[in-house]
Amino acid sequence: MVRKSKYEGATCLDPRAALLLLLLVTVVVFAQQSLYLEFALVTVLVGLFLCCGLFKNGLIFMLGFGFLLVLQYYIFPIAPQIFADFFAILTSYARKVFPCIMVGMLIVKTIPMRYLILAMRKWHFPQKLIIPLSVTLCYFPVIREEIGHIRDAMKLRKVSGAAKAEAILVPLIFSAANTAEELGAAAVTRGIENPAPKTSVIELRFRLRDYICIAVGLIFVLAVFWLKRGAI
Amino acid sequence: MSTTEVVTSRKLKGKDLITIGIFSAIYFVINFIFMLAAALHPIMWILMPGFIALFTGVPYMILASKVQKAGAVLIMGLISGLIYYATGMFTVVILITFASACVLAELIRLATKYKSFTGNSISFAIFSVGMIGSPLPMWLFKESFFEQISVQTGQGGIISGNYLSILSGLATDGMLFVLILAPVVLGVIGALIAKALFKKHFVKAGIV
Image (tube, each protein chain N blue to C red):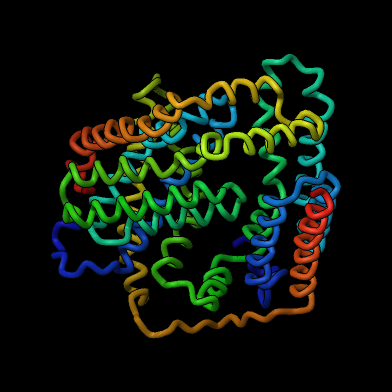
C-alpha cells in the first residue's frame, strides 16, 4: 500500500504473470535437485527484484541465501552434533522453499491487493473464495500488530504457561470478531453482495516483461525435467 | 449482535465470507507456527497434527458457531491449502488428506445441523486429522521416502544422519497409531478448551 503512488498506473509485473510465475517456481522447487539450478533460480529472482526497484529486499534475500548455504556447507559439518540436529531440517527446508518465498515477497511488495483481486476475477475464481482469501491475506499484518500490542500490555504483569496462551488468544479472537462485524457491515454497505459483475477502473495488460518472466519460468521448468531425465 | 438477525438462508453472505477470512488467518498463523516447530525434532513432526488440533480449537469452534452455514470449513481449508501451496509447503499426500478431512468435517456439520456442540467437536476432530498428511509419506512410501531424503543428505550433508536415523526409528506402526490418534484426542480436548473459554469470555461479551 505504501508503494501505491509509485506504481499508480500499472504494477511492476502484471498480477496474473506474477501468480503464474509463482506456480512455475513452485513446480521447479518441488522437482529440482541440482544445486546449480537452485543457484541460477535465486540469481534470476534477485535480478527480478532489482528490476522492480526492490534493491533492499533483493540484497537481503541474496545475503540470506548465502547465509543458508554457508550454514549448511561450512558450519554444520564442524558444529556440535546437537546444534546441527536442531537446525539442519529447518535450514534445508528454508533453502528448499526460498525461491517461493522470494516470489511471494515480490507479490506482497509490488502488487496491491486490488490488482490481485482483479486478477483472480479475470480467472473466474468464485467470488466466495476471492473475498475470504483477500481478507485472510490482509489480516496477517493485523494479527502481528495485535499480538505486539497484547505482549506490550502483558509486560506489566506476570503471566506464564497456559494462562499466557489464553491471554494472547482471547483478546486476539475478540478483536477478530469485532473486525469481522465492522468490516462486514462496511462491505455490505459498499455493495459486496451485489450479484452484478464487478467493474474496475484498473485495466490489466500483459506487457513484454510479463511474457519474458513467464518464458524464463518455463525455461526453468523444462531445464528441471531435462536434467531429471538425464539423471535417470 | 448476531442473535438479533434471523438466519433465513443457508447461503454464505458478505459478512460470513469476511468472518471466514479473518478466522482463517488466525487458524493459519497457529498452524504455521507448529509447522515450523515440526522442523526442530522428528517427534515434533509426528505430534504436529495433535498440537495444531489443541490450539486451533478456539478459532475453529468460534467460526463454526458464528457461521452456521455450509461451506465455512471448506473455504477455510481451501484458503490454508492455497497459501501453503503458494509458499511451496504442500505435498500431494497432505493435499489429499486435508481435502478429504475438510469435506468430511463439512458433511458432519451438515448432518448435525451446524448448531450442536458435539457435532462441531466431531467435525473439528476430523478436520484436525487432515494434517497427518505431512508426516504420512514416511509410512506410505517408506523406502523411497528415506531414499529421497538420503539423496539430499548426500548433497553436502543437508540433513544430518542422526536426524535421519531418529526419523526412521520412529516410522513404526505404533507411531502411526499415535500420529492418527493424537489429533482426534487433542482435537476433542481443544474443543473442550474452546467450550470453557466460550463460557468464561465469549458468551458474556456476546461474541457467540
